[in-house]
Image (cartoon, rainbow, N blue to C red; front, side, top):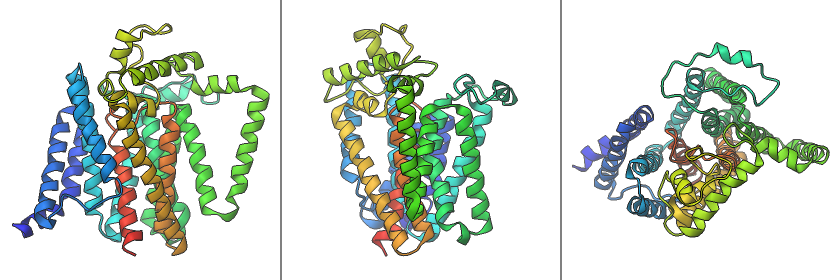
Length: 410
């Protein structure tokens, strides 16, 4: 029985991965994806007498799962909450699938190639699925967008696309910068292609949060890669200071915070204030995943927007606290901090051993965490309400798997 279970666990990444991809296409496959992750957890218990390899994030993940049970209990609209709960559980299942399957450098490299390919395919999919916003950045001609016909009925918001692509981008560029000369021609071509197409799509989305995160990623990667990279960082700080001095902080904030839905800084502050009210009134349980809009319209009506206009808090941290309460936010932040520490250890190990793959992977994953939070300050598109929400957990799974393979077992 144990041998059979052990053989089946080798298929975990493919079975769970396909179910997760299927759940992106159809919401009806979310229960199937969660069930497949649970089945393989039981198979690991039979084969190894444990549900999973211990990971640094096990305790905060347990708290997050506990708050998921709470949100299912308190929600007033299960039809909205349950799909978002399932997406969160799907992400956690994918996290453990990656950690338990990626037990060698060979498997890590193949999975990293898969991540590059996923980023490339998602960026290409944007050309036929995004409802482009063509009025934010004056230097991009609106006529460009007429070349991209919408070929799907389930279209994507440009901010959603940007928020998910920007966390995938550093994983392609990091290894390329740190180990480009030693990569095979196929790896070089795939990483360059993925990084290039992602950058093009990020600019075309005109997502201010995505473009700001992209700039931060590029600067941080230069700082991590070259000893004198701090000069670029210092120059960027000076440039930002000059722009703020001459334009004024209010003007800069209004430009950064404005979008087609919220208008400007006043609208953004009103949306954030409603989230704060909810956190104050429901600090331990949250209002239920996905119920920000309904709760705001019912208990804290907007002055600047009609009912049903804003469906989420437009801030990742506020949205998590609104959905799962302060305990849920603490759990999520604990996981994120652990991923920062783990990715940095992987980067330092790679630099010390002159291992371009490990160093580049660690740097890329570290930048992914920064991009996640940077974009999350202005939006919440990597959380439960969007189909690609499990991608964050995929990145986190890569982070812990890389740490196990390159650092702990070294």
